[in-house]
Length: 516
Image (cartoon, rainbow, N blue to C red; front, top):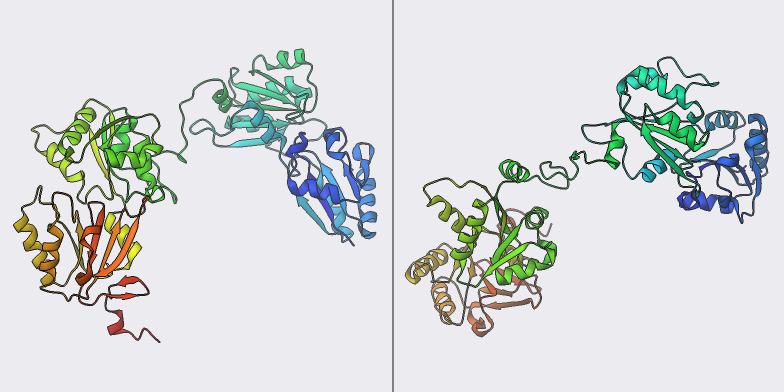
């Protein structure tokens, strides 16, 4: 015994039937379709025996389906739209159960959905209508107590009314009596998605005349409610789904102060970490800040890393030593009411612009007239460590060898302290054309506390084009291959190399039997 499939044909357009529904039609041995409500184009080329149910009774339809199912023929009962709305499948299923015939319901695109598409809008608008009532006017088929249009109209939500356009005058009267104002928008959509589709728009007070003048008497939906204003005027309402003020499982909200300031049109300053450089390592929050800003400020190399993400913003760049200049310019523009984004490589709070921005702002006598948000990024040391293995599993320090702002004798004292404390040492700004010997001196200091075999990792341009990774030792460190785009990580006395990866144990092996 085969199964009976109840299939929603969709609203009319042959391309709006589901893939599964189309396949079942093509495989069927018997198709019983819902008369003129089904587009004949869906029936062309079928190998099945095809019957129009318009002139059949329930018993005749069920008898034909049962007989075919018992003959092991595949049966498709094809209804218009979606089977969940006014399809009368319940009474057919009830009889199939009595006959112990298996069945399956395959949903379709409802005519209500097609009508919304024709109107170019949704039925639910935040703060306007968050509910939709699907119903029909009481005619020869009665409706349950409490479901008359006048009862439902008191909610004044979006209402989609099926099978009632021939009684449009009664529909209007019931809706107004129930509470809809006379100027409530109404749309009547005839044969949505068919070639002969028509739309009549108006207000409750004049829709009857418009529909009668158009000659629409059947196969049409009536949609009523203030949500319909969205396709003809600017409502200015937003959902929480894409609101930057709203966080959910896939997006964190921005800080409250920044959200309020940006939404009110005031100035704002975002200090953004763009990560180590790889486009896929920039955070969604950083991307939002960049793309929602009026001006993007930064060191030219870092701006180039995000240039493809910009949406026509003004760009202000400076060279390597222009940090104060670009931060001052960013602050000036934020004070003038612009939304400004300073982009920083890695994390903005690690050898970047967050501290300088706060230093400049805090030195002023008056508080800034804008809000500041610091948006973190993946720091270079994390990106480099991931390329090397797990060198930072235990305590570590990061030290910059640039003595442009920090006296060299202080840097040396910090190197001694890090070596004596057996820290893993992350070295930023290790070597430049003007500081060729700083890294050599740093290694000499570290060797007072480490052996020549201590593992060292060098990563140049981590996650960017031209990335290079070297695993070596303190005794064999290739100084000439290190530059300002490189980060050097020196292991502690426990660090080892396994399979080309640097590993710094945290102590698990001393407490647990790792082989077990």
